[in-house]
Length: 413
Figure 1: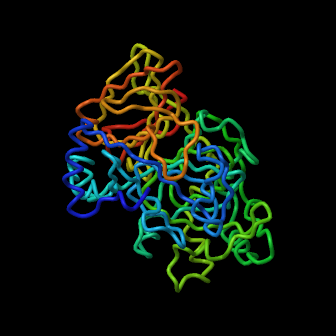
Figure 2: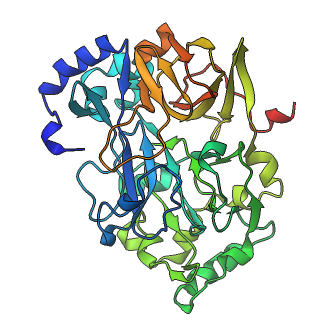
């Protein structure tokens, strides 16, 4: 995104009003690319092959695209807007975060604005060639110690972005039942001995396209190599508990990145960040595995839940997948705002075109991403497939959007 085009301060309000009026409450979002210095890009997120190191080789390859984000990426050496989504209108751009600040009730709804004063969730494509370290995201209590927020998240493996498995399409989750805290502590003691053996205490599950997982804070997981759609809370906290991945060492700093400075060598504190009961749950898959559940359907279209369930009894983030057959149309009406990414086909959402790109240059704009404001979502938006293949879009929602969401495991009913 060229900085010369970026609007800030008072200039955002006037353009935002025009953009909302012209789009019927819809905001066009541009691609938000995020590199990770410690990971190897999987190269399935449509970015041009020459652009995976657009931030520079020292920053690492781009393996993530963030959607509807008002959350900054917690990367060293980051550019000022890294992780933040931009809205585009008539050749001008402004941050979605600024749009929320200017017109909170209109954009995110009164309930979310009054409670959070921001859009508190985001999603991403997370795309790697191989597995990443066994890690967890701190819960709200531990994250607060470093003035941050916890990070519940969930996964969905879109077939459209998984034409190949890459190197390891299996994810380790949690710890084997019977594992002790002393065993995990010993892995931390062995950090500099090479492989600290943390995966010897865990179990891997084969990943299946079109399904997903529900991952609460404090649960260890070593994501495998399928490209993952990840609706999550608006935080970028984590701690890596594995010292060696595919022959690459993981620095201790990535274990304690979001730990208070006086606890960086306190192994008992680091272990106690884990949600122990959830990690050693003997029925882990039953309590975390997701398959789509139909929410609504009509002639030529179907809307499925792909992310659902509660985190510690709270509805924090959820997601749906809309499929519209060629020539069909439907009116999408939700009780709250959402952020949409088109993963297949072409069509129209209200007055905005939808087109799934084959390849994207770094900094280029696309027609696949839209933010549906509270105003648009509750009024209803017509979606039409004017292409020759199914039009498929994924959209995620903020906290307490629905009166009720399915429970994990309800797909079996």
